[in-house]
Image (cartoon, rainbow, N blue to C red; front, side, top):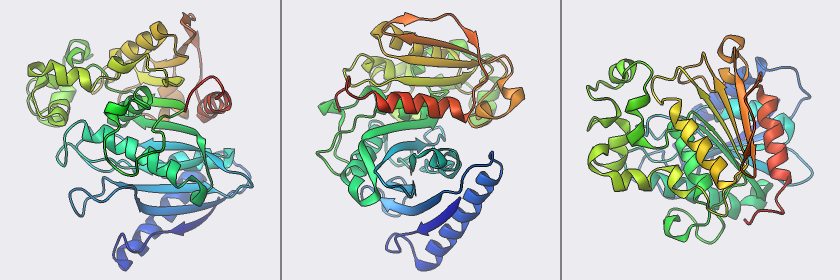
Length: 357
């Protein structure tokens, strides 16, 4: 993969811009070197694009990075945003690895950051991702993107961001005022890895009675703790504000006419976001008649998104369930790879005539 990296110097001091470009080149090269051999791809990487002014000033939550392979036609776009328990504005992390896999197959990738819960509380994070989607559509011609073929992908809290963006497309009351207004915020496919959904149902389904979760976050009362990531996101202890929990729950919005196909991936040994959260999302999408696939990993825990597509131990015993127009299939064994994701994107983004953008 050949990379040409641009960093808007107005966003960062010149020395930091050069350092960011160097780090991007190293990480992208490393990610590519571990992938199966592919034809060389000329990729232009543009770092630190602001889709809205920084808020607060000097923070990273309104920045995105673009990885666009050279092509003769506008390219479909996959937006990637990584998880942090909403505790950091680092959503661009890992986008280089996604780009290394998808760029050779004709997909542009945008790594998008949103604000942390310490910088703003919900619904700011939803407004951020929608603002980024609209910004990317508004600048599609500049960056050689196809505005009618946009997918979104993320893990953990980034999986929540993915699901929320997918089920709230074009709902005027949820558009917010971040970034440009006017273009659609709808996406045409969604790939959430182990997304939180209904915060109030998490504690009852933790596989280890919250021991790992409490240890990781320094808590005593699991997700219902006043200091949990979910409580910090909402600005209230989740058990004391069920209305806010419902507003931040993707299940609340399933059935919106713009809801796209979903590919959900979740490990059954997840001690941070219990597997039941994705089961809830899958079942609700099936009931709503949305096309959806759920790949379950009996041996996988949290933070294994890329391993789910490459590591044999992580994928051992994996099985898939699918549903089309409300008709669900029986589980079947599957060995997911990046090609599984690519085939899902190919199919979803080529069948746009039945969906409104």
